Image 1: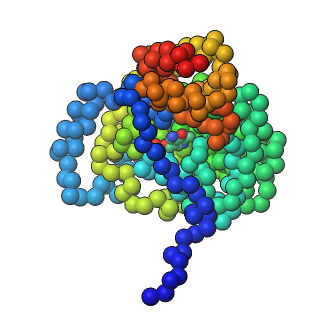
Image 2: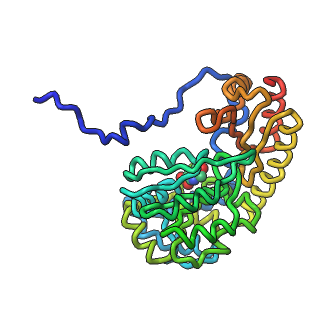
Amino acid sequence: MTGRPVPVREEIRALRAYRLAPEDAPPIRAKLDFNESPFDVPGEIRADVLARLAAKRWGRYPEFGAPRLKKAIAEAIGRRPEEIVVGNGSGEVILAAVSVFAGGRTLVLSTPTFSLYGQIAAIAAARVTDVPRQGADFELAEEEFLDASARPGAVPLVCSPNNPTGGVVRSAFLDRLLDIAAVVLLDQAYVDFAPSADDALLSFGSRRNLVVFRTLSKAYAAAGFRIGYAVAPPALVVEIEKAVLPFSVDLAAEELAIAVLAHPEVARSHVERIVAERGRVADALAAAGCAVATSSANFLFVRPPDGDAARVRRGLLDRGILVRDMTAAAPGRLRVSIGSRAENDLFLEALQEVL
Ligand code: PMP
């Protein structure tokens, strides 16, 4: 026996393990910390999915390559099945694509952005170049981002609408980025909450170097089942799929996804309600003296008047309201998911007390 240390890769050791520390709190009355849907899959769809699952053989692997699911996604978004990669949540598909295109190279990000990207870069052994966002709405620094993305070995990853700030990139910028970058990774997890004019797939879906990521975890209220996908030219789909483990979408997730995609009117009505609430909550926060970044997503990026996000988060938690303290990403900021009308009222009342 030697005393040699177990060899953990340096970039993995340097990561902070993602942990949700248990905290003393009263029963939670509004859970506004994960950008989930406050709604759920309706009862009839749940019953239908359960009946279909009961009729399946659970001892067999799902159909290889999930052809039914790819067809359902392709039909829902007006693309072809050969343009779709499916995975166990979009996080898995983003990890696969970053590994394929940016492993050993440089991922270009713009913070504050989705914190998982840093972890994914470390796993994929990609370096990171950060072009920080600027201004009251945390806009992307377009020229600097374009310069960084034009360098050899650079792979831009753009989140639009951006988590946690809520803003979208301009079409004219994406057009230029697609011209100068070898490949562009675009995470559209929250696109359903943005005006349709901001849908890059409609404008740029035929470009040979665009990879778009989407998820059923947000607008489709299916986060518990883990279904995400990428849309890309078939030649890139083939490469990305080499980095996704076989059968990563299980039987249950596949059936649920097919069922929710067959009822787009459900997601549409949920989205309408969330977008209306987003406006109402943003107005109420501004009236309470908070700074609120313009959001095209199902959350708001908020600075309380005293800039003490940690105190406000704790005060809200003591009143049974969960929100996210984003101090590490942007000093003084909280991220608050848009809940049901009742949850948002509870949040606003509790906030008045805390402030
Ligand atoms: N991208 C962004 C920007 C997100 O905020 C999230 C979830 N918080 C994901 C991707 C991953 O979502 P999922 O794995 O549930 O599809």
